[in-house]
Length: 208
Image 1 (cartoon, rainbow, N blue to C red):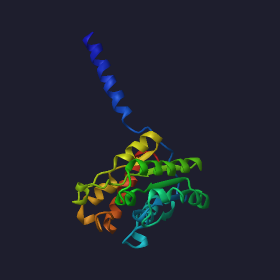
Image 2: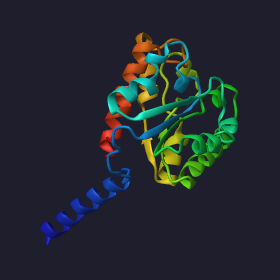
Image 3: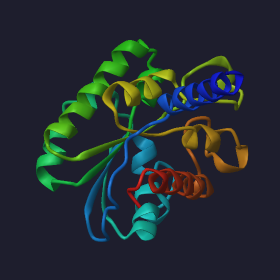
Image 4: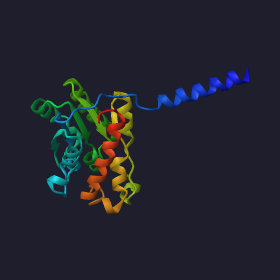
């Protein structure tokens, strides 16, 4: 009887652990497929050459045709009005969404930012593209001294919308002063590190 109870407990622990993990899996996206990198200055590649930004580096590794649709200074409430035209122009299979940093700098409420990003995600879904969310560090006193961590809204959105989240990659880059241009932008080496983390997580979800 004790053995049976022990087995049941182990099974419950495994099931509960599985509930906390993303079950989103996709077939690998083939070389040459159009992908949009949508976001702000981090996507655009502020402070580095075109060859050094993350979309260009990611395209080299994946073989995807990645369109850099990053706009420096853009907030999520602005980006949600731009995403539809980008999707119609390029008709991508996959959209990498990195947005929110400028909203945090402008002290917008996180709940409002969350709903703006949700609107972007839902627009991507409506165009039959796959949304992948890249978590952005929260603005906090600890972030400003070089110890940033992801805003909780990204994990919440990924769970609520059942989409892939690329977590901790951006935050980890900004934690290393050798990898950042300033407190909010990676440098060339930082973008390279960022791409490595993105590739690893895309592979774990089957997209690569």
